Amino acid sequence: MADKLKVTVLGCGNSTGVPAIGNLWDACDPNEPKNRRGRSSIVIEKCGKTIVIDTGPDFREQINRENIGHIDAVLYTHQHSDHVNGIDELRVVRFRSKRNYIPCYGNAATFGDLSTRFHYLFDGGNHALYPPIIDFNILGEAHFGKAQDIAGLEIIPFEQDHGTCTSLGYRIDDFAYSVDMYRLDQRAVSALKGVKTWVVDAAAYNQESNPVHANLRTIYELNKEIGAKQVYLTSMSLAMDYQTLLSELPPGYAPAYDGLVIEMDE
Image (cartoon, rainbow, N blue to C red; front, top):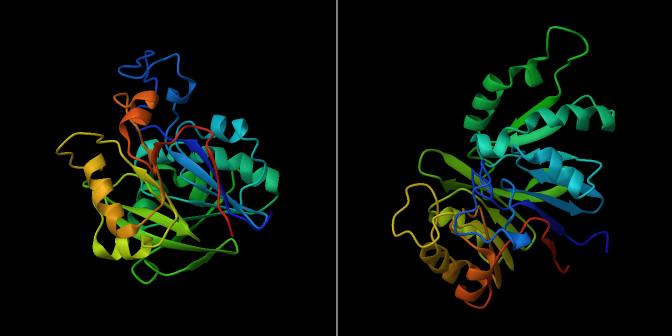
């Protein structure tokens, strides 16, 4: 069992989370626990290794909720605040693990933004109590679509069009994660082909045109070529009620929820 891939959805909400600030639920039924969504993030566990994808504003509560005591590496999809603003919590992760640095991975744009906004995590503060804690590894053209050794696990990064920036998706074994994108080029589709389970951004829902997020029609079309047997929707907005989605989605498609555990067969 320890060698099998386990994925836990830490959060599956969009940038506002559900409810949004001010206790705003909009179309989401507040009496449905699976409508309560933190900002999007997952944790991957395999062979004794634990890798997190994104550290959003709800990161501390998500990690505590799932009782994650150790993190071997962090992968970043992109630099937007709802995916990175919990990065300060890595100070405690580093302290508890007794390591000098936490290995982090992402593209050059993400590194540039994080190393400016959170420079003290990269360069250290003005006192020995605040050493640098992040060892950032830039994923570039030579890495996309090819398996990379990250904390001893083989992970394939691929580029995604998020409109205002390029985000990264990640594949490990027969599982893939595509958050914050509105379209994928053929290289990304090729990297995804054959996955059994795909967790994918659906924040545009039924909108015909959204410049930064995928809608359901786009996801259905992409999956005709990708061929995932199970697709979970993530980055879900206040317009996307859990039970309503269950009644609308075709077989093989379902809304994710915070705390969802996906266990992949070997």
